[in-house]
Length: 333
Ligand code: SAM
Image 1 (cartoon, rainbow, N blue to C red):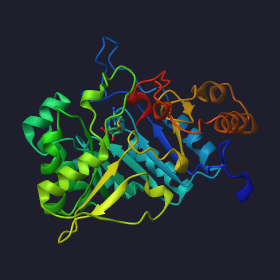
Image 2 (cartoon, rainbow, N blue to C red):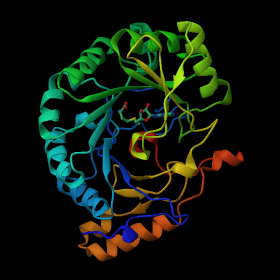
Image 3 (cartoon, helix red, strand yellow):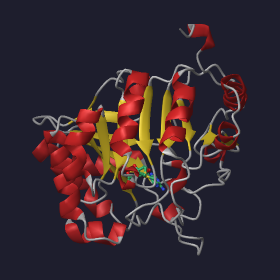
């Protein structure tokens, strides 16, 4: 049994309780905010980690006090063994396993994932209209994703929607997405467009959370009511109730009002590297030592050392560029 004082903390004493693990860098969409736009190689690599390696590295973290795991990618549903991975991880975190997916394959697999032990799913939906969806993702998949969203809810999965907002690309979708939340009682969280490796980030395309909220209020003609933060594991979003509806709207203001002082996260890339900060810190390879039969003590030492050096805040807060060696499709967002 892990003593509280031995739980994973970073050098500033922030408790680290949430692991995001990317389990493949392959993806079936080419979202404009994620994919390389500067001639870099396309994200087509194969899964680097076997199922047992994923589970072994997740277990390394759960034994250090991680209480919630999110599987991401690339597109994690491209892995045929996702249900098995979920079933193997769920007991490690008392069932707190979540998935971030584009939802393209969710309609047919939601029930099986639920039965394997998946608790919740965040589905990326950056547009509420078919043509806009196609422009953003390079695929005519809107109906499939909507079927996936409904399938997830019907299967009993906690279902939230995520939309990255880019001025000039899908800011016209803010109000339609908020209307979808109201009409169907979903929680839609709008994410500020973040700069990442080769994704062509540009300040002209950036839309701050306050402007997103203002547009929702004007578009719906309501005063949003902010809800209190329940606990850290619920994530960094500010959530707002929409009066007269069970739908909710949230914003994730990574750049305009960063929440690094509350950061409780650690990331595992699809190549088995740990990242202490999404936007900074060199990654630390855990996969090679695992493959070379490093002892649990040695792996733990690597994790604790890297965590000790976690940045206090992402570099963009001070106007600097992020330090990135991997794309978002490899780190998992
Ligand atoms: N394929 C899955 C999906 O579409 O949700 C999981 C991978 S995706 C990299 C994980 C999360 O990162 C998604 O919520 C996505 O919206 C977010 N994301 C990717 N690039 C981003 C960017 N440049 N700015 C903000 N969020 C981003």
